[in-house]
Each structure stands twice: as C-alpha cells, then as structure tokens.
Amino acid sequence: MIANKILTLSWIILLFLKLTWGYYVIVEAHTEECFFEKLTSGTKLVLTFEVVEGGFLDIDVKITGPDQKDVYHGERESSGKTTFSAHMDGNYTLCFNNKMSTMTPKTIMFSMNVVDKPKLELATETGGDNVTIRHNKLEELIAELSGTLTNVKHEQEFMEVRDRIHRSSTYFAYNPFK
Image 1 (cartoon, helix red, strand yellow):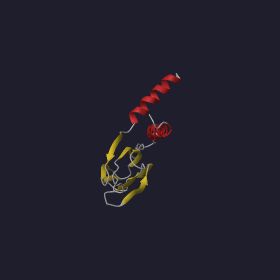
Image 2 (image 1 turned 90 degrees about the vertical axis):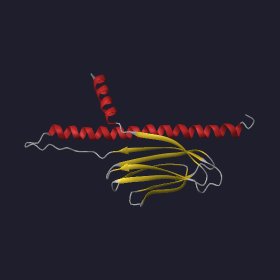
Image 3 (image 1 turned 90 degrees about the horizontal axis):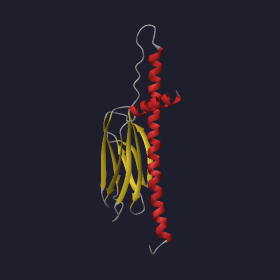
Image 4 (image 1 turned 180 degrees about the vertical axis):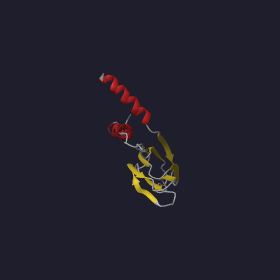
C-alpha cells in the first residue's frame, strides 16, 4: 500500500520536473560569452555556476533584463548561485566576462533552471468544490518539491566538480614528479 503511494508520488514528481540545462563553456582571455533566456513576468530563473579550470578560478558574471537593467552582477567570483523572478516579459542575458584575464581561458560549468509561476484555477461553480482547491495546492507543493530536488541535484554535481578540482590540485602539490 505504501509502496503504491510512493510510486504514484514519484510519477507525479517526474511529471512536474522542469527542463534544466547544464553547460560547460570555455571563455577565452579578453572575451565575453553570453547566453539568452526568454522569460515571462513572474517566472523564476535559478543560475548556478562554478569556474572549473583556469587561472585564479574567477570570472565576472552579469545578468541583464530586457530593459537593459542589471538583475545580477558579480566580479571575480569562483562559484555562485542566484535566483530571481523576471520583472517583465522578454529576453534575459547572462554573460560570463573574462576580459580581466591576460592569457588564461576559463572553463565554467553552469546551469539555468526555469521555474514557472504556479497557476491556480479555483473552483468557480456555486457551492465551491474544495477538492479542486486541494488538488491545486497539492500540485503547487509537488512543483515546489520538484524544484527543490532539482536544486539538490545541481548542488551535488557542483560539489563533485569542486571535489575533483581540489583533489587534483592536492595530488600534484604533494606528488610533483607524477
């Protein structure tokens, strides 16, 4: 009985999983790489990034809205996570800037997770159908749980990358002849 409920809940969570893209990109010295995401007002975007390789493992990050106003700006960051809600419809621009580097390209691993705003459809019939309201609340909670699980997955991936970087640098620091 409990196994059936868990299986059903798992299927529901899988249905609500949102599309998430993870990328690796190399930003050459003195250049900037930009990516675009079309968002509607109220939609949330979660950006997670990590500089995996190159120089001092730092990069400048900037997110601008369709009105060319800065949504997020960070200088010489090695990793980060930011979440924002789109304030208007349009294309949002994410740029990784390596113009401060004289000769070292940087490899960046990043992901953008777009989370739609919840859509509530309340019962409109006279007498009010409480079942519809409860189902909508359940759908909202499942979507929130799905987003949280996706964030946990991304955090684990970034921790693996960070661990790999530290292990390789420690290995070569203590084994210089290898």
